[in-house]
Image (cartoon, rainbow, N blue to C red; front, side):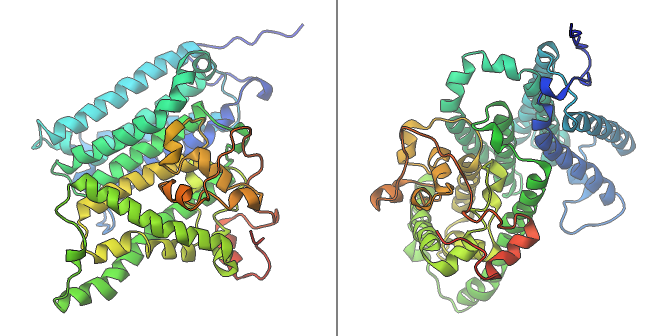
Length: 454
């Protein structure tokens, strides 16, 4: 007779056979949240001794609610607890306990709500209060709240699947997060924070929510990444999506925008600046997507361009983080048909920032491993339901759905593809020996006959 395994309702760390739980599936996302919080702790500690040009000064990180030495001790204790719990998840040794999960869900949701309210009050009623307006501190509190909610989602995973939320969620997740992110962007834009806060904070929140949704409502469990995949995609996200666009934009302004301005020339008359902000952003999406559509289509038809674009098609499982997997040459070409021309036309920062919020959140969902339903939105937006077919291993399926943010150009030029009777089966390149790590993929386009032409 097999002995019954009794779970302690107050312990995360009950050991069970691996066949009885799937806690390791949650581990990659716990590591991401843990890494974000660890960055805050160590960056803040370094700023007490050094001035680091790339980071905000120490006062921007510290709300002053308690002495720093006391805050640092509390942060170290929290970090150690997070490390302990995350290691246990990685070892597949956490037994699901719905009672404990409900407690964590209430705690995490209350914590999350309190920090969002803190942010809103800082933007409205208490703009002079350092505690309320310290957005860096607030954002990392939200990271901690989402860590608690991630742990709670594991303990409640079987319970969640048994309620009607599973039927409603696939239809509401995308419009709710997208509308919430844009609303938050406008709220932050009207505050006294740095303009980039209105971009990064909604994007960070969307990133965290999509991560949690992938854990709780996965479309395909076999697509859940291991630590090696996450590590490589973090390199792509940081270097290619984070640093490279900033460098290219700086050089573009220095080499082209500034010289044109110094000559007294202006192209601002071309852009309809008197239109409402949302109308300008919509026009920017339409125009940018038109040019990106043809670049993307050319990248699948031209052998030279495909060598670089093949990097993006190399993953054999889709999840939100590999939306950033692009070769730097491919990404640079995209930038020259995306935001850079609009900078030259004098499109305002407010319009470009709104575009970037939509671009980022839509991209997270587009690549996500979440069970979603879009309905009529498939005829407007480049959704995950469409984009999965674009990553099919079969060229006759992947040579479709080229839209970056929108699907209307695919409809207009007859490349829209969404079968109703089946789901995409196999992802990636035909060449299964294509290298997968970051440095090897930077070199891959320059190796003859390595890619498989689609």
